[in-house]
View 1 (cartoon, rainbow, N blue to C red):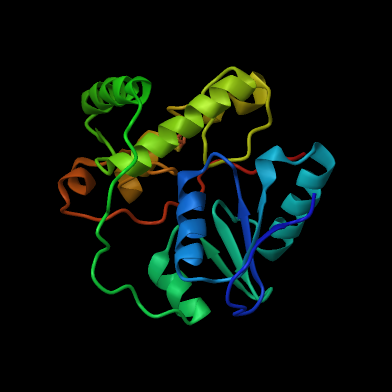
View 2: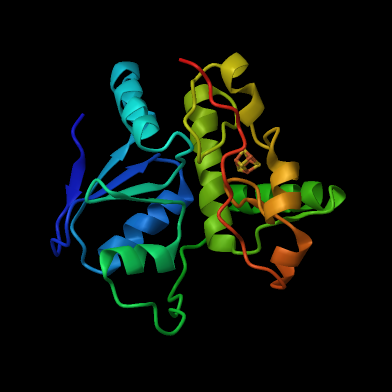
Length: 217
Ligand code: SF4
C-alpha cells in the first residue's frame, strides 16, 4: 500500500508513520493540515503483514526506539510523539500563538462517557487519574473500542498490534507498563492515564518513551 498524500505547501518530504487508532497521530495530521503542509502518511496497523514488516524494518534501521506518531522529515529528522513545538521548528512553521479556541467540540458518545467514568474510578484507586483533556481521552477510548471490534480485546491504540491475545497480552489496556510510566513520566504511553500532578495542571505531559521490550518477528 503506498503512502496517502494530503496536498498543501511543499516544505520538503514530510512522512508520517501512524496507526489508524492513535489519537496523537490524528493530532499531528491535524496540525499539518491546519498549517496547509503537504504530507504523506501510512497507517501501519492496517497493512498486510509483509508490508508492515518492511516498514517496521525501515523505521528500526533509522531509530530502533521509534514509536507513534513518527514523523520523518527529508529522510533526516525524526520526531516521535505529538511534539508541536518541535514539529513547527523542524518544518519552519511559525510558533503557535495564542492557545486555539476549541470551537465546538464533537459530542462524546454515551458509551464513551460511561467508560470514562469507569476508568476514572479505576485510575483513582491506583493513585492516578484519567487524562482530563476529554477530547483526546474520548479519541483514545474510541481507538480501544475499534481494537475491541478488530481483535476482540482492548489492544493499546498507540502501538502496533499483532492481533493475537497471547502476543498482545502485555499491551491490553491497561497495559503492563502504564503504572511505571505514570510514575516516571506523568502519563502512560498513550496519555490515557496521567499522574495527579498532570491532571491538576501542576505538571505537563512529557513524551513517554516506549518501555515495551522489542519483539523479534
Ligand atoms: S494504559 Fe497502556 S494500553 Fe492503555 S492506553 Fe495507556 S499505554 Fe495504551
